[in-house]
Image 1: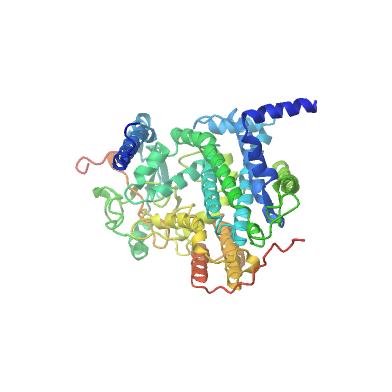
Image 2 (image 1 turned 60 degrees about the vertical axis):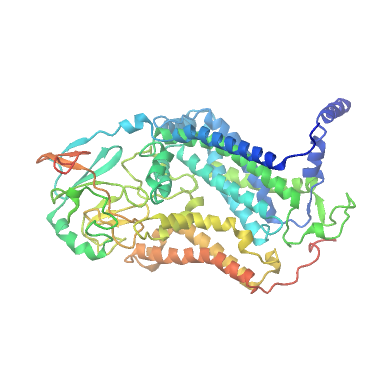
Length: 434
Length: 201
C-alpha cells in the first residue's frame, strides 16, 4: 500500500517538480524563531476563522435570497426551517466577530513587538489591506439579513461618502443604485460579499504569507534570527534560533485552535447574540425605511473608528471632517512603519515613553469603542447623576480620547524621529536559546 | 538576423504606445460596469408627487408620509412651539437659512418658520449628518440631551438636534438645516408634496 502512495507521489513530482520544494519552503524548512509566545496564536487563528467563514458562507448562500422582499424572510427560514441552519448561521455571525477579535490582537502583537518595522513593512501593508478588505466584507455581510439595523447601518455608512463636497450625493446614489438602500443595493452587496471580496481577501492572505516567509518572522525579543549564529539541528546553514514551522508550530497552533474552538463553541451554543453585541436586537425587525431604530450603532468592532465620526463637529457647512478623521485613524496605521522609526523593535527593550504611549493608545481605543457602542450614555448618568447633559459629557470625553488616539502617532513620530527614546540594550540572540 | 542593432527609441515608443492604447481600452471597458451601478430606470421612475389631507392632524401632532421612499414630516405646530422659534436663533447654526442652508428649502419656504403657512411644517425627515430619521420630541421640557429643550428633533444616531423648524443647533455633527421639499396647498386642508406652488415652481 505504502508503495502505491509513493508511486503516486513520484508521478506527481515528475510532472510538477516545484510542488515539493514549495511545501518544504513554507512548512518543514521555514525556520521560525523558537521563542514565540501566546501572542503568536492569532495569525493562524485568523486563518482558521477565514476558512470557517468561507465554508459556512457557502452553505448560507444555498438558502439565502438576496432581494429586498425576500432577504429577511430567507434568513428567518434558515434559522427555523433549514436543518441545522441555525448552527451554520451562528457559526458565520460568531465567526465574524471573532475574526475581528483575533485580527485586533494580531495587529496589537505587530505593534507591540515592532513586527511592522524594516524589513517587514510590506508584510504590515499587506496585513492592513487585509484589515481594510475585512472591514468592507463585514459591513456588506451585515447588510444582507436586511433587518432594520442592516438597512440603517447601510444608510449611515453609505452617507459617509455623501459628505464629500461636490461629488458626495452623486457618489452615494451610485453606491446604492437608488435614492435609499434598496433591492439594487442588497444585490450588489451580496455579489461583493460572496465573490469579489473573498477573492481579494484570499489573494491578500497568500501575499501576506509569501512576504512574511521571504523576510522571516519577527519574535517577542525583536531580534533578527537570520543575523544571529547559524546552524541548527536540521540544517547547518539555517539560523540557530529557528525551528521548522512544521511540525513545531503546527502542533503549537493546534493547542491554540483547541482553546479557540472551545470559546467559539460556547458562544455559538449559549450566547450567539452575545447580549446584542454580535447580533443586534434591532436586526430582528425587518428593514423599514420610515423608522430609524432608537439607537443606530455599528457592530462592536467598528465602534471605535465610528465614534471618531461623531466626535468631530462639522465646520464650513460640511460634515466631511468626521469622515476624514475616521479614515485618517486607519490611514495612520498604514503609515506606522514610517511614523515609528525607532531602531529597537520589541517593547521589551524600548523606552518608557513608548510603553506609556502604547498603554494610553489602548485605553483610548477601548474608550472610543465604549463611546461608539453608546455605553457612555448608560453609565455617565449613573456615575455623575441623572441631571447631566449627556451630549456635552460624551463630546468632552470622546474628544479627549480622539486626541489621545491621534496623539499616539504624533508622539511616536517625534519620539523616534528626534531621538528622544532611551532604549535598553537588545540581546544578540532570542533570550530563550539554549 | 540582418540587422542586429536595437533601436531603443523605437522600442520605447512602441512599448508606451501599446501601454497607452491598452490603458484607454481598459478604461473604456470599465465605463459600462461603473455606469451599471447608477440608479436604474425603474428606480428613477418611482418618484411621483404625494397628496395628503391635513384634516386629522391635531395641533402638536406629526404625520409621516413617504415621498420618493423618503420620510416627509408634516407637523401642525402649536402656537407655543411657533413662539419659541425666534428665541432659538442665537443657538442655531443658520437661523435665517441663508448661509450654509440656503439650498435646503425652496425660496417660498425661506422664512422664519421655514414653511408656506406658519403652523404647517412640511420637511424631509432626514438628518443632514448621515441620513437617519430624527425623532420628533415636541414637548417643551428638560430632556437628557438638553436641559433647556424647546421642542424639536433629536437624531438617535449621532445626537444632532434641530428646532421646530428643522433648524440645526450649534455643537452637533449635522451641518445644515433639514431639507424642505417642494410642496403646495391644493386647498386649505390638502397638501401636495413634490410640486411647488404655481408662482414659485
